[in-house]
Length: 447
Picture 1 (cartoon, rainbow, N blue to C red):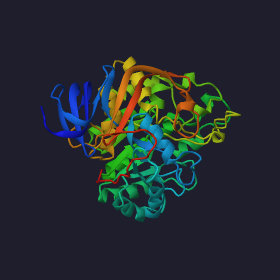
Picture 2: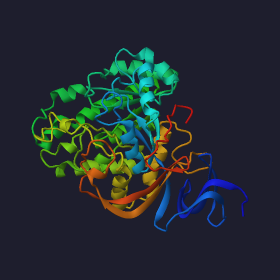
Picture 3: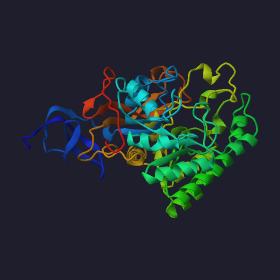
Picture 4: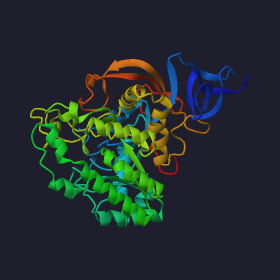
C-alpha cells in the first residue's frame, strides 16, 4: 500500500492508457498525472473516484479547429458558450481560429485583445492560431513569439472581408518565412478559380450547392499546397478535407517526405449529401458534405493513416444568417456546430464499422495534440495534464439542440440518435461543473 496521498485517485477496469484499455489506478497531484498503477494497488487520494463498470476513462479531447468568434461577432459564439460545449463533449483543449472574430488574429495587438476576453471566460484550456493574410508577413514571427500555434490561410474568399485570402505565390512566400522558425501553415484548400467557374448555389436544392463547390476545387488547391510545401520544406496542414479524390496524392506526398498533415471533420464522416433535404441550410458548410461513396473513402483514409485527425471545424453563426425562412444555400452562412457532439458522432459511426474506441480517441486527442505540438495533452500518461473524461460508450441519447451549450440552437444532427455519453470531464484533475471557468490560455511551447 502506498503511503502517499494524491489530490485525486481514479480507479477503474477501463482506463485508456497509451498501451490500450486496462484496469488501472491513476494518481493526480497539482493537476498532473503522477502515478499509474495496476488496479488493486490501493492508491490513496483526498478524492477517490471509482468508475462504474460501463465507464471508460479517456484523455480529454483536443479540438484544434474551433471558431469562437469573440470579440466582434459574439452573437455568433463566445468563449463561455463554446468552452462549455467543449467541456460537455469531453473536449478539454481547443485551439481558436483567427477569423470570424473582429479583429482577426493577424497582429500581436489583435491576439492580445482576444486573450483579454478569453482569459476570464474559458471552461477548458484555449490556444490560438494566427492568421496569414496579404501584407502581414512581417507579423508572423512576432505572433509566433507571442505563442500562436501556427498560421491559417485561405486560398479563396474566407467568407469575411476582414480576412482576405492569399494567392498561391503569397502562401509560398509565407511558408518560406514560417520555415525559418519551424511554424506550421494550415490551409483552407479550395481553389477560387474552380469555384468561380462552377454553377451558382442559389436556391434551396442541396444538389446545386454541392455542384457549386466541386471536388476539383479542393483537389487543385491541395495539389498547390503539396507543391509549395515540397519547394519550401515548410510544414503544412490541410484543413477539413472533404474530397476523397485527394487521398492518393496526399499519400504520395507523405511518402515523398513532404511535411504534410490532414484533418477531416465529423460532418464529412457521418452525413451524406444524398440524405440532405432541400432547404436544410443547417447542413451547409464549405467544403461541402459529399456523397456516401466519398464518405467511405474518407473513413478508409483515416484507417490507413492518410488522414491524421478528426476535429470539429465548429463554425457557428446566428440563426438569421442560416436563412432558415428561405433555405437558400446561396446566401446561408456555411458552418456546422458540433463541438459538443464530436465524440459521440464519431464513436457512433466507428463502432458500426468495428473500429475500437482507442482509435477514435487517438484521432480526436493524441493526433490533434501532436499537430499543435502540445507537450502535455492528448494522452493518459505520467507527466501529462490530468485532463480526462468519463465516457459511457453504450449509453444512447437523441440530440436536442436546446440542450447544446453553443450559443445558437441549430444543428444538422437534431433528432439523431447517438451512442456514447460523457458523464464527467476533468480539467487538470478538477471535475468541471460549468459554473466557474477554470480554463487556462495556452502558448506554443509552454503547454
